[in-house]
Image (cartoon, rainbow, N blue to C red; front, side, top):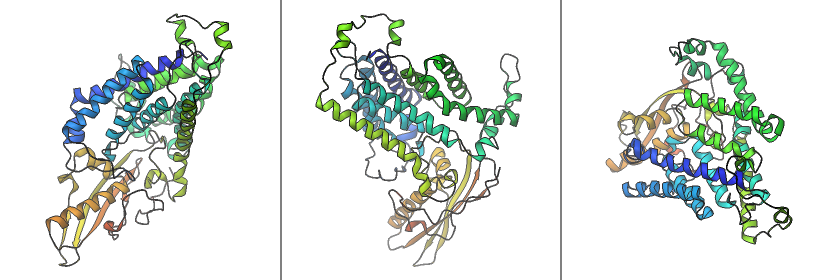
Length: 430
């Protein structure tokens, strides 16, 4: 098939990857987010990932920047995508506090590019399976984001959009009281339903030629509005670019004419290289894993928005507004001494905010706190308890963690069983 659409997507993604790395330099985020914190929260199962120093962080961002440009230019596409994937994912794994669904998606997309390079051969063609793999990679985001929105908070209470829209109640755009409309709960409820319908329907609508133009206009409006209302960085641009893969494979040639394939070209398909065949199989295996990860929260009891068990890597986008507060009680079993520790004394504001609503991060910090204090107090045997309170989607605050459970007894790594120390969720009826 014509490779023009894949090449156009490769160029756009490569440029956005480089711009993303450049933004970290321009805004000073390398220092404030990755170098300034004294403690980093590891991803469960990825505790082995080394934390690079100042030079290492800057070199990794430089590698992402250069690899993005190489990807855009088509220079060694597979290697460029692999380097961008490895370095970007390494930076992402430094601290769990900064997890975002669109960072995860970008890592997955770069991995797909490394396994199924969006390149053209000498005749401007590419294997059809490459287009299929990339389309499924993009579709996974919308499908699971839509399925996750099928719930009482989103569809019956219009939460958390009611809270978020209410924060913009004073907005005026072109003399129109936009904020007043956003503050109306009925608008938030309507937007919630529209968001679910959009996520579930946009991929089929993009795949069908008669509805493709309307679907893409809706996609532009959707991502334009979310990018305007919420601080989500380059994610809207990434999804606007990625959605073009559902257009006809030759769509860029209508804007930038080039030599078209002749009937003779189409009649002589090139035999696939064995390595390319295996790489495509690995790409499909990666997609299968990505499709299974969002389902794992069914292995745990309780609402995933409360427990967070199985909530990451699942494209549960824009479903939660949480506010939390946590402090830690430390008990020395030998001396009987007791004291409280405020985590904000060691953590950054963002780290403390994210930890306060995430049970596994609270347990991680409790283990770190015990290890640090035992090092400072030789001979001490410490137990650490948490007083954690969380408000979810406008509900009153409730205890998240069993205050009588010693969190030093928890284990690092992936939790394959439900955590008994996470308390049941408050009433979820909207």
